[in-house]
Length: 232
Image 1 (tube, rainbow, N blue to C red):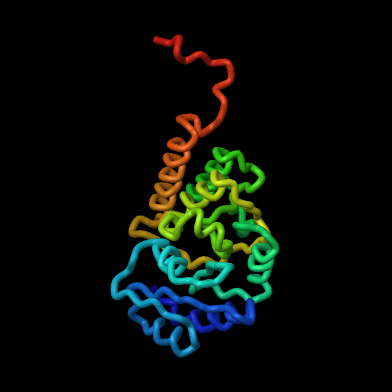
Image 2: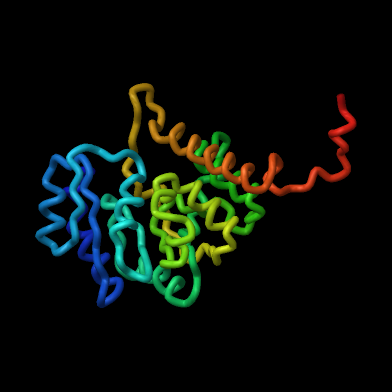
């Protein structure tokens, strides 16, 4: 929403990723003039007077985008173009979903719920190779084919879009590592907790529910030798 401090640098670097890059900024609930800064820098600005909700801007931006490759970044994380190139390069060479290989701080006594949820979802999807890589974290890039199969609306619930990409057989790879956990602006609620943690964990539960609807109550995993029908 309000990214005045960083937005101009984010746009300037994003524009360097490719000669024909179209930079789209979803300004929702902005009150600090971020939308004007984006427009002055030549970005296409989609303005909404009120906040659309967490991650909803991804769906809105994707719906408006015309490119073959869609790169998603945050307005408060300034990255050089060289760190964004690997995602675009991967999709340009046939990958459908190019993920950030960020795994999160897993070697802790109390691991953040979102980190656990990302790892757990990939296990359920039989993509243990991805670890904690997920569409939840930026940067990531999608092919036009991926967008058309998943649908722009699903991008507002990143774990759901991630599950759909796996189930639909898209080529998904973790292509480059950027420690966004270190860069993300810390948001703390009244009790000192992360206010986004329950929301993002709930998004993962929505993805798991969808997976069970597609593959059955065990998510497509074998029940081995159990004969549950014999239990009364």
